[in-house]
Image (cartoon, rainbow, N blue to C red):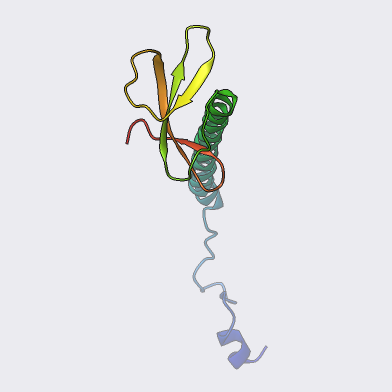
Length: 120
């Protein structure tokens, strides 16, 4: 090899050249592996929380759609779900009605989903 080409090599070509030190790939893998595991564990946790929220929303909507009411719900309006003594449900516009057991306050959304607004 010519001297010019040897100077461009990323490693030494003589015995007096600095030794080649291999990177510690085990350390890299253990550090990055644990970071990657944490990333996926957090992603799974987030998905599980979202799944539980959607599942509880579906249960709430099933309750409200099975309830009896004598009006056409309006988008953005707040309604109140009560449990009657015969274990059936009643959706009402009346708030703080003491005749029945209060369950939850809900709002009808534009996508026909009932949203819990009790804590708002």
